[in-house]
Image (cartoon, rainbow, N blue to C red; front, side, top):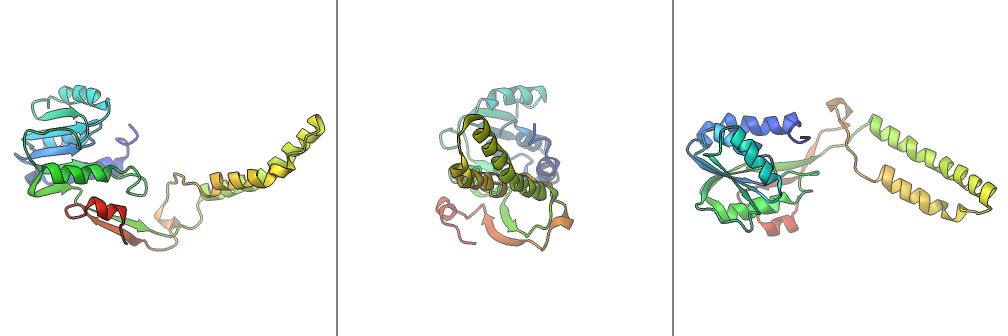
Length: 228
């Protein structure tokens, strides 16, 4: 539900598909990593003739119920498996997929999209999305960052209090562990990624592209050794 409730994400796919019905009308579509089949349903409503929704997990069972409830079972065929192993009765005109992860490539789903492209996409076929660009931008002061710094700063006092208590009640000195403890807390609070809702005013500068991907031409080897 979290992903479906991500309006910028779901809305962008909805607009890209439903605002371009000419790209889907009477076309055969492959949805890679279909999940709930929301993209498959968008494609069907945009006029697709047939949609193959490939989902590796047991979500495929639930997706069939969702598809049936929308009255789209005659268009959408849910296949449980991976694009590396499934067999389709025909090549496809369009591949759709919500493959982006944290920092764009975190979920490694793009590998499967490229395999699907090479196995099933007709020459000249379309990919939605077709391109992706990863930007980096400096961030200024953010409440969540300040709170993490303050929490980390408090961990030294926390350890001092802990060590005093252990000495007082149990006669055991833990001070030799302080450095390792603080290093562990530093990694957790200051060097671990976190979710932050950023507003444009919190950016300290403009973004710069560090990675640009053309899904029609990039290869698996390119992903393993990409250059910005």
